[in-house]
Length: 314
Image (cartoon, rainbow, N blue to C red):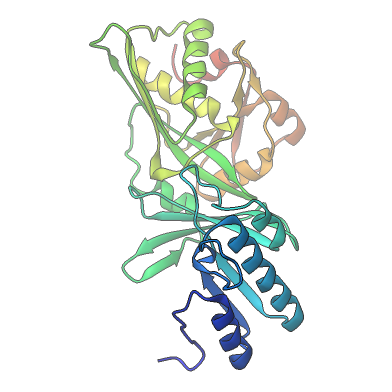
């Protein structure tokens, strides 16, 4: 019933543009670009030529009239935009709206921005009233965390320019098969197997007869190596039966020789942990040397995986 909103059910672009020229809106949303077509082209809607030409017409009209266009596009099974790659080059900004069926959280991520940085994300939750902004994703992801639970460790990941605390959970159990099972949700499977090999070779925790399951709580996907140390600690906690204190956070990249390597944005990660009440943070030695001390939080610097584990278990 809004006078400021008009809906048009039309896929012929010439018909759409005539209505747009008559109404002169400030913002136009095209949903979706793969359904639009031009009469002068013989190819079907959604083809490479149709998508390219319709997008070109939109770009020309937008520049001529200073009208903002939001173009909604289909994606392929691997998550990339369907159709010609030239579509991404013609527009000013490309945004991906990511999520899955198992969780209500959605992430709006920029992969191209001609007028600003792409190092930003927006986190939303799909509720009964639609999308709701999550101003503090870390607090949301850590809610409901059990106390004194084995196999749980908090890490801080960087999503865009935002530091987000997330919980890494690990479960190990004696295998009933000849080859132990390995399952990973939210982290790269190959990296998980590498970390398990480091744990066995460099620390001496046998995983040959243990099934291992690793999960990032909340449906987040962590694709940076800074979560390596938290994965190692969570698996060790489950395998050896010790508890990582709930006020402890850990991040750092683990190398094949068992060393803990420095990561970027260390201070931003520490300040995010401090803001949510964490009093201990385990970080790489190189990062600690550059940072010095930070008031209100105890920084534990470690050089190797064994040194990190010595803080919790004999």
